[in-house]
Length: 284
Image 1 (spheres, helix red, strand yellow):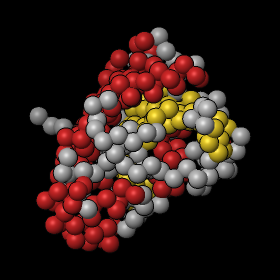
Image 2 (image 1 turned 180 degrees about the horizontal axis):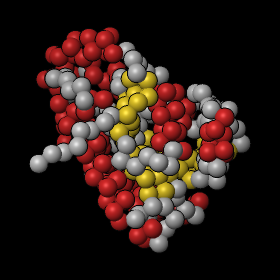
Image 3 (image 1 turned 30 degrees about the horizontal axis):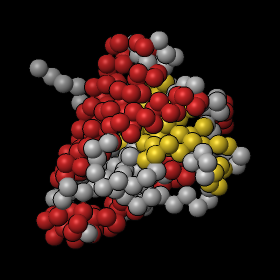
Image 4 (image 1 turned 90 degrees about the vertical axis):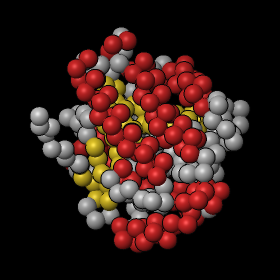
């Protein structure tokens, strides 16, 4: 990740910030480090992709009594890690994660709603994790950060996908959830601006990323009847390429440090790198 001289002061100002990340399979390790390989902020992890294989945390030192991990001397609180086979408790788990973070660190400054699964067979769970949890996480973030609630403001990043622009017959419900994340985020960004919440709300849309989620599309127990279209999905991967998580982390950091961005739709692809989607003004 390249840092411009003008960005150094912006990065350093994050050193005392508290960030809650709902945990999918995306860029956890890369996000936690600055380009200078030192932690930028205290990170609280909430494991919401509850049916997926846990992200490897082999480089972290586990403290069993606190369920915490340590890297470069910084303590990161791991609130939720257990796997579950259903989503009935997802809403309360997210609420508990927010409250536990605030109880431990005293406040919340940044929320990244990143949890995601790809399951067309159990499509209701996909909606619950990919869209409902983003909505829940955004509302909880506002309760803990919005000036409307007497707080000091903050930053929300909701993670969507280029699937919202490049629909695939292989994953119709996943595609629908990612469309929903963009629409919800843009509407909430307008609400924040009009309501003077003091919270910037943006959305990040990566293309194919090299994570375990990418390999789940080959399994019938994940994709159901749509698994027969997996070759079409593989052709799309070959055409558009696969991103490294470090580039996603760079995009997230840009959304965090650029105070001019609210309601932005960041796209990350192999061909264009980090860029922004533009919308034509509506006409009567």
